[in-house]
Length: 239
Length: 42
Image (cartoon, rainbow over all chains, first blue to last red):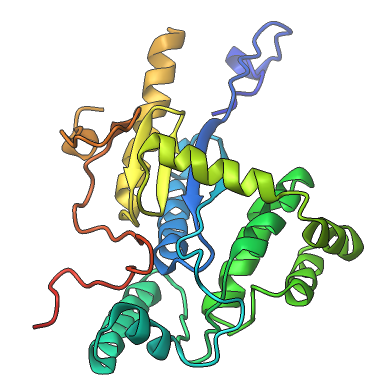
């Protein structure tokens, strides 16, 4: 939470500034993870629910490639992919997707699994690191997830990723160069290795202030409560 | 805060974090397994 320098009675005092760092939230996620997008919305809702009491936060996304063996181009539906990988009957997969779609809708997300193009997300993660370097990681994270889950856009091919990068204002040529060179490949692997070192097996996984771990697409209230707790601890430490 | 939402779990995972219990039904993706419903279909 940032405090202004307004003093008692509205007078400004040159030494009244209390500058605090935003609360850091590190999030491990994958673009192709439906619960990560839902969890993202829940986190945002949790922050919004705090209203004027919401502390300032700094969010950083980290790469977690859920299925490295996924092909860049998979010719078939999401149902085909899941049934093949999990060996489940198509009817059961349909049922599962309907449930996810319902939970997403409750979070304000219009998932379209019929249009979704299953793909490998490695290059998308590299692009997210490029975007982080450019200060636009949050914008690109939202754009990629929306493209994948609600618009049926392909997020595995360089050409498509460059288009999406440009849509959030990133330099298309620089984005392409970053992807073609693999300049951020090591950063992606470092994130994945860090997740392993932390014992993170599934995503989304949220870390608040490097202290509190939150696993899964938790309800908004949980995120709000954790933020309140962290902010309260800061206030106590500063008292 | 003193409420239950931030009570910690006793999970044996080698996590350096204080894990927030939250909603145990909150879903995660592990590998390709993202869609398993709370009550698996028979």
